Length: 255
Ligand code: COA
Image (cartoon, rainbow, N blue to C red; front, side):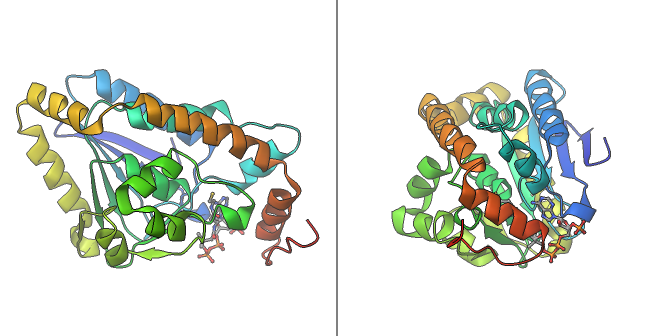
């Protein structure tokens, strides 16, 4: 499909965001295609790992705000396409690696908390401006981020909406290593190849042990999704979405 390039190379499934005109913002059709690819890859003996990459110097600007606006007119839940994808993230059965160059916004950042290995270029910047959009953290990040980096840093990322540079994200334990942009994808693929060479059953069992009980993560995703869905049609979110489309700052006092 035009906005995604999904391929399998040397038993590694590469999911590349290719929607540069919209900064690789993720829309419904992309979520569906990604979920289908992850499920199929998990079931296929020809796939040993999944790798997410961006393109055009950006990882992803997060969820498509135009689709949020569509949902905000009448619907009070996340779309089944979005929910299908984020609910599958903790259930992915094979290793997931991300190569982050440039901006990773919203779900572009929170999906990284479900990856086993994350590599970032020096220009990578992780941001979750949920509050600026009148929204709340999603994709299990309200549970996973405090566990990963401690409450103080997680609050700065998720609630204050502070941008984390590649180096700060590495210090916080979201990113494994910062590598030059021209070596980023090769580094991710090399790590995937190293995993591909491991004993497959031992790899799968080790990963399952390390991931622990994923039902708590899925439960948190559902809890967040309920609130997030209701927030989409809130006056605060509507004002924020309108402001984004009109390329102006939001005014929450009148929301
Ligand atoms: N959803 C839909 N469209 C988006 C988008 C998103 N999340 N992010 C960017 N775009 C679109 C812009 O509307 C613009 O479209 P246009 O050319 O038709 O006007 C195009 O992508 C380029 O974006 P622009 O804002 O002009 O680029 P920039 O380099 O100045 O800024 C970002 C890039 C990512 C910082 C900025 O676009 C942004 O803040 N996006 C929103 C991120 C966000 O809040 N995501 C949701 C988190 S829950």
